[in-house]
Image (cartoon, rainbow, N blue to C red; front, side, top):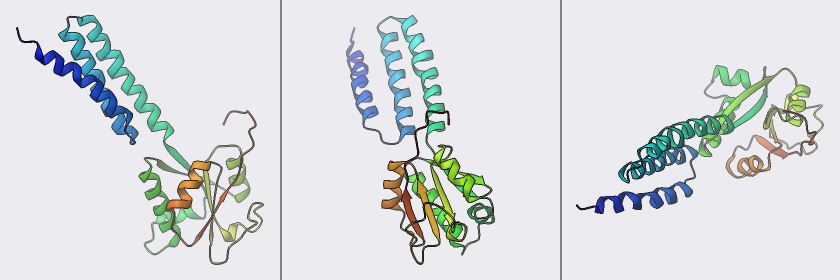
Length: 199
């Protein structure tokens, strides 16, 4: 009996594992993790361990992938705090020539590039927006300079830049500094105090 196909199937395991380690997109990694689990289940079945193969298929592949998908989906979110009467209104109206709508579209493009989902969180006033950033409810704030007159952190106002973006995440600051080419925005990084409270 020719068992050379077993060697071929077994050789797929390290190949799939290597492909898994070099993935950048987390959703591609989930797919390859499913393939890796399916190959492992097939190897167990071919070698006569049907119970282990069934366990690998149900727990190691289906359940694990489902839990990973939920974790990835919930963690890859950039929560952007905006004012209800500011950028949020521009986003809902989606006016073609509105620089506010264009800024939101640029932020969505940047988020998609890094496999993030942009979620707009509305706040009533700049004070509650700042408080939400410091209490780690949101990752980034974006506010028009007209609402920013009494803003404590606007120490370096720039002429001709009507929007101010502030983030408490260093990685997001680096990404926005590199990829956000809008001349209408100024970017600020702040350190949120670590209160140890739930957020």
